[in-house]
Image 1 (cartoon, helix red, strand yellow):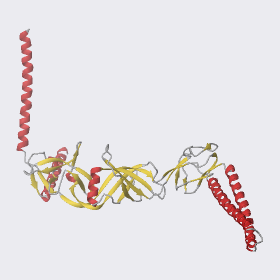
Image 2 (cartoon, helix red, strand yellow):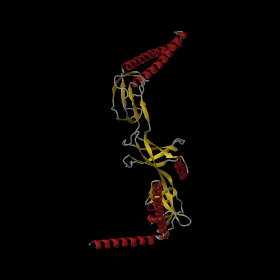
Image 3 (tube, rainbow, N blue to C red):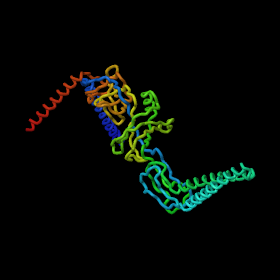
Image 4 (cartoon, rainbow, N blue to C red):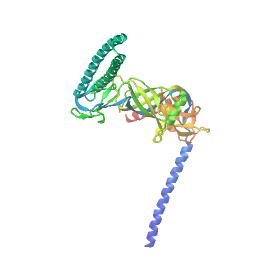
Length: 399
C-alpha cells in the first residue's frame, strides 16, 4: 500500500516538474525571440510650447442676484392677490392687498384734522395782524397781542404735528398694497387670501431677480494660482461661458467678477462668481450647468499631438525617450485641446522627445529604431501594399 502511494506521488511530482520545465522553456524561447526581433521603427518628435489662452471648466450653479422675501409691514387680513405663482413681476408692482378700511379711516381723520388746523391757523393769522395794528395805536394792551401771537405759534406747531401724522397715515395706508421691491420671478405663495397677517408672519412669497443673474462655481486652488500668475493679478475680470445640461452653449458670455477670499478646506477649491445677462429669463435660480473660464493673457504651454497619446485605465500616456533613446511609458495630464494637439498640464515639458508614430510595436524599455516621418510613411505604404498582395493571393486561391 505504501509503495503504491509513493509511486502515485512520484508520478504527480514528475508531471508538475515536466509542466514547469515546458513553461520555462517556452518563456526562454519567447524572450529569445523578442531579443532577436529587430527593433521597431518609430518616428520621434520634440515637445514644443505654444502661446495659448488657458481655460478651466467647472460645474456651476445659477444664483439670483437678489433673493427677496415679501413681508407684510402692517397687521390685517389678506383680501386680494394680483399675480400667479411663477409670474415675472416688475419693481413696484402690486402683489397683495391687506384689508384697507381701518387704515383708510385713519388717513381720513388725519386729513380732517389738518384741514381744521389750517382753518384755525388762518383765522389766528388774521387776528394777529389786526392786533398788531391796534397795539401800535395803543388800542389794546401788549399782553393781549402776545397772547394772540402765542396762540398762532401753538396752532402752527399743532398743524406741523397733524401733517406729520397725516404723512404717517398715508405711509401706513400704502402698506395695505404689498408691492414687489425688485424685478424678478415670484415663487410659491406661502400665505393665501383670507389669512390674518402681521410683520412677524414671515414671507408671503419670495422673489428671485432674473436679470442680471449670477453663476457660482468652484476652482481648484492650484488652478487659481496658475490663473492669477498667468494674468499677473488675482482680482481681475475674466471672460466666462456657460454650457447647458444638454451641451448647448448659452448665447451670451459673462464676466467672472468675484472670487472668495478663502480656500474651502474640505474641497481645496475657491468659490468664483460670474455675472451673465439674462434678458429672456433662460437661466433659472438653482440650475446646474458647466462654466468655462478664460485667462486674460496667453501662456507658453507644452502641446502634444493627439496621435501620440494612448490611454488605459490609469489615464493618458505617451512613450518618452530617455537619455539612451529607450522608450519609457509616461503618464500625462491634459487640459483641453488646441486644434489637433492636447494641451499638456503635467508630465511633459519643452524639449522632451516622444514617439509620435509606430506606437503599436513599442515595448517600454526596449530599443527602437528612429526614422524620419517620410521614411515612416514609406514603411506604412510598403506594409499596406504587402497586405493587399497577400489578400489578393488568398482570393486567387479561393477561386
